[in-house]
Image (cartoon, rainbow, N blue to C red; front, side, top):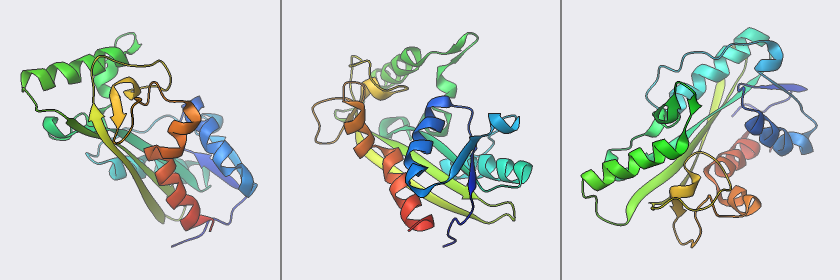
Length: 202
C-alpha cells in the first residue's frame, strides 16, 4: 500500500460539510487540504454502477487536473428488499428541479417497500468508499459499511440525507436522532476513514 507523503491533498468534492469533516480528520497529520472548488474544477460525470467506480472517477479527475493527490468519497444507502437500490443513485433519487429533496426520496423508498410487502425488519446498509488517487494514476480504495434497517416515519432532524429513516443494528435511535459525535464514531464514513488513515498515514 502506498503511503501519503505530500504536503497538500485535494478533496474531490464541492460539499462544504464533507470538506470540513475531512479537514478535521486530517488535521493531526499536518496536511493542507483544498477542495475541487478551490481549484475551479467541475464535477466529473459519474458513470459507474459501483461506489468504488464512481469514487475512482472523482479522485483521478481531480488528481490529474491539479497535479496533486486527491481524495474522493462516494456513499449511499442500499436497501435489501429493493435489490440494493438506491445505492450509487442515492442522491439522484432526491433530485428535483429545485434542488435535492431527501424527505421525498425517503418516502419513495418506503412506498416501494410497502408495495412489495417487504418483511420487517427491512434491512439496509449505509456504504462509503474512499479513493486516494495520485497524479501518476495509482490509487488506494477503502470501504466502510454500517448495517441496519429502514424505519418509518422519519425520526430526528440531525444529520442529512437518509439519516432519519436509518436505524443502525442494536440501536434505539436513527442516525437522524443520534448525537452527531456518536453517529460519527460508528458511521460508514468513519469506518472507511479509519482504514484510509491506517493504510496511508499509519
